[in-house]
Image (cartoon, rainbow, N blue to C red):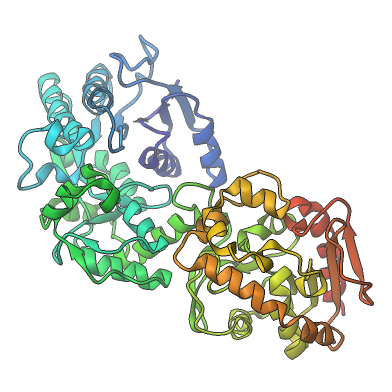
Amino acid sequence: MSANSVVFGAGGFIGRSLVLELLRRGQYVAAAVHGSGDRLTEWLADRGVETDRLTVVPADITRPGLGLPEPGGLDEVRDVYNTAARFAFGVDPAEARAVNVDGAAHVIEWAAARPQLRRVVHISGYRMAAADAGSPDYRRDGAYEASKREGDATARARASALGVPLTVVNPSTVIGQGQYLGLADLVGQLWRGRLAALPGGPDIFLPVVALDYFVQFLASLPEKRESADNTYWLLDDATPHLPQLVALLAEHMGVRAPRRSVPVGLLKRLPRAITRADPETLSFLSTDRYDTSSARELAESFGLEMPPVHDALRRWTDDLVAARFGRVRAPRAPYGFQQVGEDRTWVVGDRERPGYVFLHGLPVDSDSWTPVADRVDAPTLAADLPGFGRSAPARQSHDAWLAALLDPVRSRPVLVAHSYSCGPALRYALRHPERVGALVLVSPAFLQPASSWLMRSPLAVPVLRLMSAERLADSLGLPHDGCLEGPVEDLRRAGAAVRVVAALRSAYGQRGALRIALHRVTAPVELIIGSRDPLEGPSVLPVTEIASAGHYPQLTHPDDVAGHLVPLRERAAVR
């Protein structure tokens, strides 16, 4: 096998991005992974990266020799990157030491036997320079940080003893798609409305560094001889202090930032059930600053420039929410929080020239349209209605919001609405027929019997808050395929379940007016329903009935729904 570089921990958050960067630079790369490399190759393929210069090798850094083929295996390797780490809180010290200490030594020892070795790059951590660091203390610091400290010292000692050219990089929190630990937990609490107070005081500094910048720095290091036997602290000095950082992200997501704070000393004495923070993370709540001058100078010599930290934090927050903080796979289309009229809104897709605009019903969100969006023939636009899903509570009517959402649109899309959203969509088409290629109402609630338990039960709100995804799927007649994991999490956000029930009950009073308005729309209108979810009485409009479908045909029968929408758009385009 031939490779210029080998990356240990190549299946991890940092390792896979480094592999991607090295491949883009034209290098031959050996990706050393624990277990199968299928997830890595799939991840690279999703990003359109050619893998003909990639070799995936199984490795176990906890073993001497790393489990790699000997002799003669990877003898052409010049650069060795150790991105492997046991990054978790609350782990057993022996488990953490096996990777972070013994693994670091084994990588150095293996690299020392490479006949063409140019450099070993070891990833450590920015807290190595903390003023109160001292020697590793597993009881005080916890297994993760203590083992990283011990691993840092071990890597340096073995490299010195064996004459290995070593560069140590100490990054702060690396933010980017796929980072769900540490600071991400605090962002999650903020988004869910559970961050009652800020941890620490006004000068707490939790620095970050953008993932793309970080791996570009790593990939460039061996090209500079002067970087050998040096240590670099890599973090963005412009990271706001924690209160300003939280305020920035709260504004971006449209949620409230806490105004109170709790001193670190008190946090350490409070039980975890109250703080909702792992005790090991509290050592990162510090006012310490770090000398980044050598890293900045080296980066400038590479022609690297850090992206604006505020923009990087916002993009990372969008990634966190899109992936439900690691619980689901993020969509491929452009996504994120945007200002739509007066409301911070979760938007997915093309806001300028969509062929289709999808509006969701309740209690689901815009992701309910993903199976159909993946099957249609033109760009799509979808968004979570204000007050629902991932969007912030509404400051304007849904009619005003929809007009603002579609204001930048320069195409004449097919407007597709489901259930509750059929009302706002119908009123928009009535006011702006020239901007709609066609109107498709899927399971329109105002044409169906008001039989949902959400309409009747006085316990609807607490039941919604406590429902599991499986129970919600049962109540809505949907399969247990994970499609409701997101909506269940959304319903547990502050006030969300109350808003869902209130909206459905308010919409019931509009049924008569909507039925009258339906006959006044001049744009083409069609209905799609499931055979198990019939209309209340006959319809004079075209109705497509999908066999065996219920109230959510876009989730259970996306092929049928998409198969109807595509020719409809073609007809609308020539109208």
